[in-house]
Image (cartoon, rainbow, N blue to C red; front, side):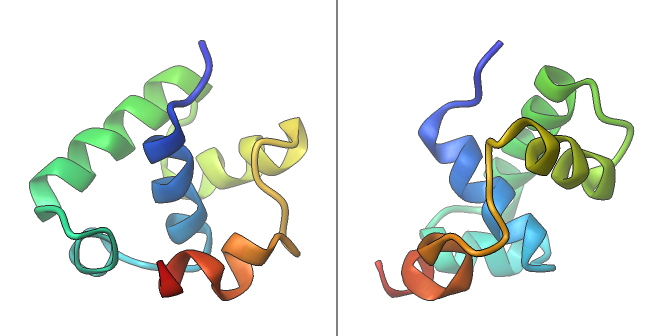
Amino acid sequence: MALTPRETEVLMLVARGFGNKEIGDVLGTAPGTVKAHVQSILSKLGAKDRTNAVAIALRRGIIHLHSPELSAGILNG
């Protein structure tokens, strides 16, 4: 099952080391909503935790270490 665009945004911020509150601040949503997105990401990717989800997403090409969004672009939107 594919990640939604919002789940991909959340995952990119997780990859940057952001916590749920920080992600919520960046995306303008509540930490509880971010937590729900993270749980959905873990389920869809079959990951055991956030770090494992990032590793899986990198291997599958869902996110990239040098993407503009991961570097800074997502934080400016």
